[in-house]
Image 1 (cartoon, one colour):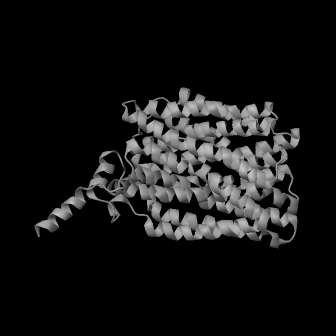
Image 2 (cartoon, helix red, strand yellow; image 1 turned 135 degrees about the horizontal axis):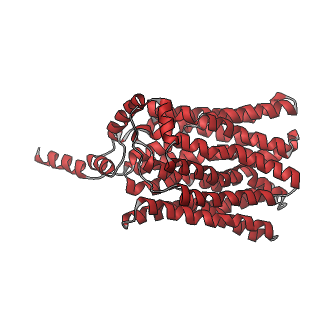
Image 3 (cartoon, rainbow, N blue to C red; image 1 turned 180 degrees about the vertical axis):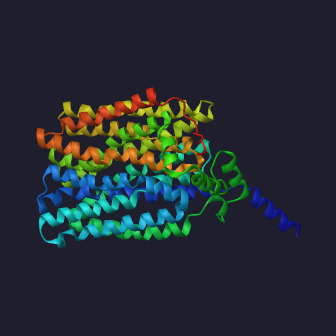
Amino acid sequence: MDMSRTASSANVAKRTKVRYAILLLIFVITTFNYADRATLSVTGSAMRTEFGFDAIRMGYIFSAFSWAYVLSQLPAGWLLDRFGARRVYAASIFFWSLFTLLQSSIGLLGSAAAAVTGLFVLRFAMGAAESPAFPANAKVVASWFPTRERGTASAIFNSAQYFAAVVFTPLMAWLTHAFGWHMVYVVMGVAGLLLALTWLKVMKHPADHPGVSAAELEYIEQGGGVVNGQQKAASAGVEQTGGWSLVRQLLSNRMLVGVYLAQYCINVLTYFFLTWFPIYLVQARHMTILQAGLVASLPAICGFSGGVLGGILSDSLIRRGYSLTVARKVPIVGGMLLSVSIIGCNYVSTDWIVVALMSLAFFGKGIGALGWAVVADTSPKEALGLSGGIFNMFGNVAGIVTPIVIGYLVAQSGSFNGALVFVGANALLTVFSYLVIVKDIKRVELRPR
């Protein structure tokens, strides 16, 4: 009896690390999330050849995802705060994977015009389905991680966008080359459907997870994690505060608006990479699709490394006693200044130098991509999902603007020079936003209605 009590006490006292398994799961899901977004950038050249898309039409097709993604952010954030990440995220993964799978069949529609329309509609539907993903990630990290670990955790799931390019861009390029563009959508769609089932099986709140010890739960909660009990209170707070009243409060906060604007500018770089970058390598640098797939993975590796490093650096500054404001702003500002190097590609002709400059730019972008950590640090506890949705809505307006603007710039000038200047200028605007608009970084307290 005494031995049993001792063993039980030891198990309670031992701090488990279930939060890292949860982080691994959202990292894998986010990797597929970005890989599914990037399918069109890899298959785009082959599809343009088959269906005869011009650059402007391609720009609009690229933007279809983001129109729906942006319009769906506020409803997605409200659903997450109302029903929780487990159920809403499972539905999100299932439907975006289904719409990815259906894109393999647009050739069956007959005419090129019908294929263009079908592709636009399916990309639009996929954007709506993916809208809860990143707010859900931020909500999960805020629940499972204390403040001192949140920067690294957020940087890791956010860096999945680069990991997706490292792993899936060469794979999708090979599938396109070996089996045709259709197979890319079949493989990615089926894998995503299986992932939705995995999420439902594994994901729970910290207080409800059978593998979490009392010591780990206390560590998370005492460190600022928004664990299950607080989330229930938060859900009630959303009802008391009121939907549109809550949105107005968030959008009237200068610090949050600066963070939202900066995310738009950062995502200009993201969407250049997700949409036009492989086409830039093929058309402007005269690479084959296989070469472009391999070359695109190099900046992605640098972006992934920078993303993880930025989170580690930020959290280490907190542990050394620096304020949250300093710890978050130093990597963001320094990283985005590095990203301006993308403009240098206009002034060199050697391919390896172009790749080096792109890699440096995306390394900097990775270091500076701490916006989701800032959202987890600053959003009201009653509205983590909604604030994340607004943040993501602002950020993904770049997904509408960037491909269309670049499409027009390329169509009118016949080169990508103006497009790269456009991308670099947005990196500078990010620096301005964090240095001038965003003051102290701290959690916002809501006013009751």
